[in-house]
Length: 281
Ligand code: MN
Ligand code: MN
Image 1 (cartoon, rainbow, N blue to C red):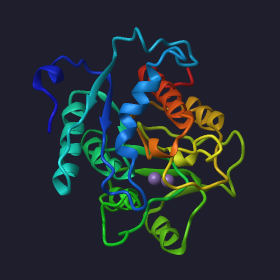
Image 2: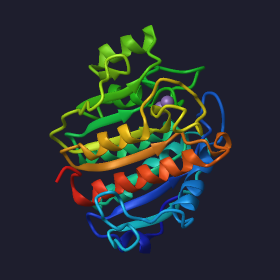
Image 3: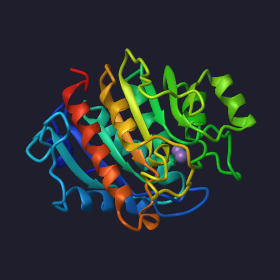
Image 4: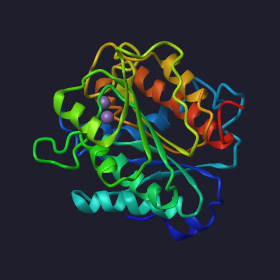
């Protein structure tokens, strides 16, 4: 499916567009992230918090922020192509896409769309997992593989991974082959801040956070980042975020709704950074 032409034509360059990508068919372990976009919006607008980011920017009155709703997707390769096509329609117009996954498989088609407009794109990838498998259980488009596809197609000039705590020999070899800058949790220190100069694509897998802060994910991996540490990392970026995704939130594993609130909170902080060009201003 593509976005309605009239809606597309109404979007000015510099708009930040929230786009739901309800796809979890490439999840290697558990379904559920397809339900995430609706659930994040629900808590965002539930009235328990306001719509201000910590910088004071009010997303509730910000005309440059537009919610385009959810994509309606087919399954299989066609669905992946539809995600890329929808992202391309936006990126070509100078719109900044903030997508709500979905599992991490959605990042590959979205970054494919970005690479065409941003040849100097750097990716900041926050995750417990490197997602660098060449294939996983026979699926090259698995949620375990997006960064292998991105790097072998040279869709980014840099890939910096933070939060990693499940590295294995195969993915380590892949990281070396592709020149990935891996900041795993053994080496990570409070206050660590990756330096970017060019435009940044931020890919946030909710399992980068410790399950104590975000239990609503399919792959619980203790020993991760706190919500505040992820916020500080985002707020400390000095280069513009031109695109971002929030993926792998699984509402089926979120009994008290705290992961939904964490995702909504991070959405607000990321959107504010995208609107302001850079958070550290
Ligand atoms: Mn991931
Ligand atoms: Mn992960």
